[in-house]
Structures are given as C-alpha cells and as structure tokens.
Image 1: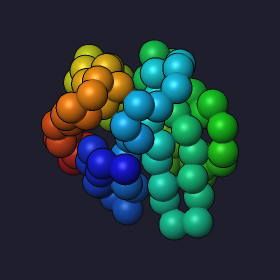
Image 2: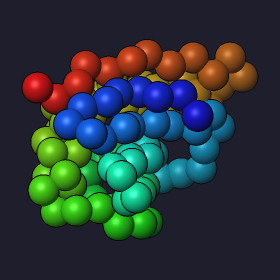
Image 3: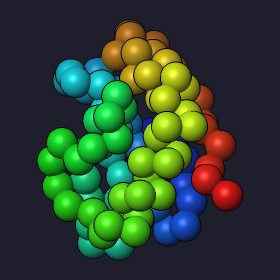
Image 4: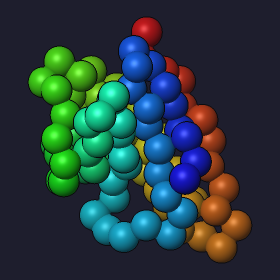
Length: 87
C-alpha cells in the first residue's frame, strides 16, 4: 500500500491493481475512507467533515496526478509518485 501523501495528520495511499472507480484511501486517526478521485466524495467509510474538506481541496488540486498514480499502480510494474501535500 504505497503512501502517496501525508498532511495535517491525514495519510493518503493507494493499493496496487485496485478496482474501479478510480479512488484512493485516506486515514485520519481511527477514521478511514475510500475517496472517489473524480468527485472527491466518500465511496466507503467515514471521515470527519473538516478533514474531508481538506482531502477534497487536495484532490481538486492534484486530480490528474492521482489519476496517473491510479493508472500506473494497475500496471504490472506498479509505479507511483509521491504527491505534494496540502500546505
């Protein structure tokens, strides 16, 4: 499970060869959620509202990089790139 980014106590990661729709996983303390890359909405799980807004802002800024990582991790080599954290 490659860690893609980390900011404000939120850890963002993706699994290699994961299923559609394109998404990433986020963890904040005991909260975990699967986030849709296209919309920034929670597919599964739960997240505090303040941290969800941070994730959504970050997703909007880095949507193309997230899609590139999602696509790359579905390939045999499973290459990924770290993404700049929200500051």
